[in-house]
Image (cartoon, rainbow, N blue to C red; front, side):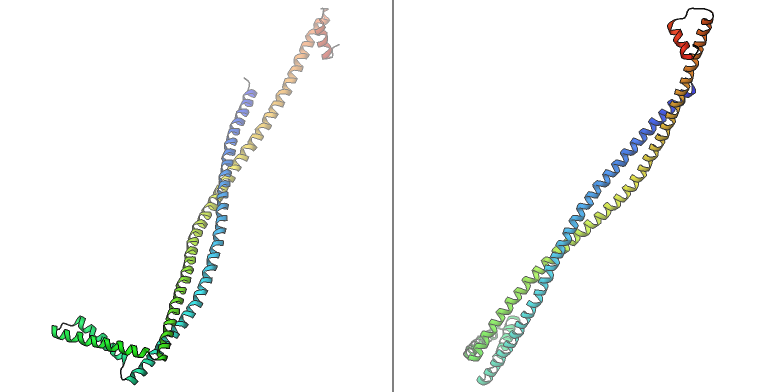
Length: 292
């Protein structure tokens, strides 16, 4: 085998090896692009979820703020009722004091004395006789307080004040319940908002991680793509060399064929000059070589 054939075979072998490398690089590049595409889809899905969560957070925040504003107004109403209730209790005490002054009985002082004696009876050690006497005194005070309260309740002004105090107390308690119910709703909205904020933070971190992966993958894909292009360029160069080698080989073959035909024609012509009989094929060779 001549050196030209060896060189031609080497070029083809190099081309085949480069083509294998190019195909591997292309598969690797396409695989990285597919991986990047899937990550981008995951990132876009998460971003859509993030937008929805943000909308939900804003909705919870709006409702929470509305409830807090309602709590504020409800507290103002409750505090006003409590203030009126305290004023009414003061009015009742004033009426009781005035009535006690008129009747000679100070019911508040009697109640204080009663509580003092009850505490003493429960906490202080004493003889049975003393305890019996104390119990009797407590019993008498209870009866006196009861009778005085019944007399006080017969006073129209005091009776009206007591009814008003009860009504104000009920309204204040009801308003307090309203405050707590609204405040609970506000807290629920706030808690849901906090939970969504935690989800949002986790999803945002995840999208950041995915985006960083996409960037690294694209960098790797670009590097592999450059390798692929380099292989393709080398293949094109070798194809040019192969094409040039084939053309040179064909040209040399044609020259060799012409030389062989000319030599054959010269031999036939010498035979012709010697008077030998020529065949039709011999005559065609001479005619082709321009010797006839």
